[in-house]
Length: 361
Image (cartoon, rainbow, N blue to C red):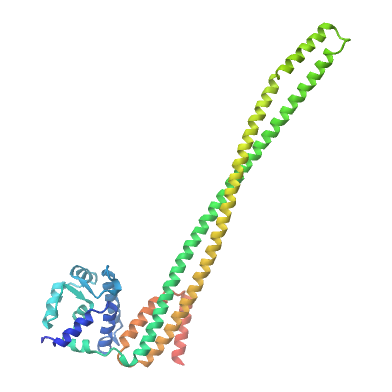
């Protein structure tokens, strides 16, 4: 096999320096009529190969143009290709391609689609220059659709996160409110204890006052005997000096219950404040979730409009472009197909029917 012309070799190097997508489109355009126009499977191979190259190029991804030897081996293994990178290079060396221990996707295409003898055609193939304005507009609409879809996916992610936060906030609010109710119930119970203790204390104080009044009356009743008056006076003096045991217990109990009630009151106030705050947070998060959901819905609507606009224009251009450039149009259509997966099924069917109807018109 003859070696390729030095000028063609230089052009091949320039082609191999383009991004994986640009190289793939170039190859599709160059061999559209010969290899791809009537062979959808071969078109899909280009798509699969391109995306695998991008996936394996962990550093540059879509901006890359070639794989190192190790990743090239991984590529070949993934597609069940039994040849080695070395064997592929030996075949390519027949046309004197310069090797740098890397494999560009163009070099792989040349080998895979057996176009070694046709490199001049590849590097000089028309890329649809006369229809480039239309193709570029289709590209612009596709890029917008892809961007809008990505924005919609991001809005959907944010909406989901906001909904999860709102759900969690609501659960925390319910928990805080239940805790507040529990604490308020405890406060009411302690308040009941306080009332009972106060009533018991007042009863003992009333009993003591009545007893003192009776003893005082007896002690001052001159019609009563001296001994009886003295005994009454002595008992009265003892009562004035020290409260009887029942009254002491009632005072202690009442004082303890008062402290308990004060503590319960503070706890209830704190729990209520916490519940109120939690409810405010929950309501605010719910409002944010609703706003995020609306944003996501609006973004989806914009993405669907962009996809529809890109689809309609692309179908029109595909009808108008007859020569070179068909390969890029196939790539745009394939990328738009990926974008369309974002759309709900019922809306996708509606769009397909609309496009089909416009084709017939």
